[in-house]
Length: 232
Image 1 (cartoon, rainbow, N blue to C red):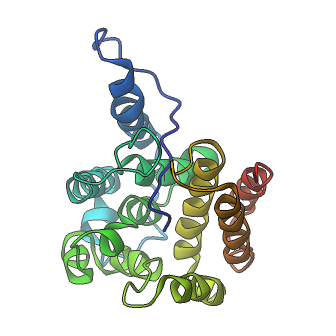
Image 2: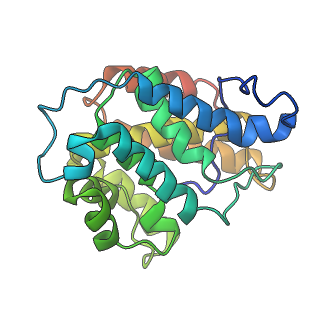
């Protein structure tokens, strides 16, 4: 994961909050309002979802909202590394938005995992904690996209490239959307202390990871290719 996350949104501040500060609208209200609108459009067909994941498979919208709430609490004290230090929770929301609104994928397991994808890696969340609350399938997808923080950074980056092709389809979708969100950030709202060379190196490394993810979603792959065209 990149530690700097996408804060772009497309929803508008609700009219019932006419005095909502612009920064608050852009950094928090708009992403959350978009997610609520997204949930209203999610398909209720559950035939492809494991029945072991009771909370998500039988009540997908409630499960996704629970994942959002869980992630928001876990990431509440974290900020992005962009110049404005935006709330970290914007990134998981952006990843879920890319998967659903841009790629048209409405699998609740994937959307829950997208919202939770940084919780094990970047907070005190455990695999068993996710499994107890969201079911083993969601927890396993999150575990698949989690870096081993006991390894040095360069080894973790190399491992992402080497293991990309071995991920499950659901994990590939989350990983691919994560890379799309991060490329957009590095191109347009990068960490304040990143040099041009470091930004270029991130683009090239992300492409090497995504090369191993291809074949899981043509829509997401096209979105990644479009984002890569903005390489600094």
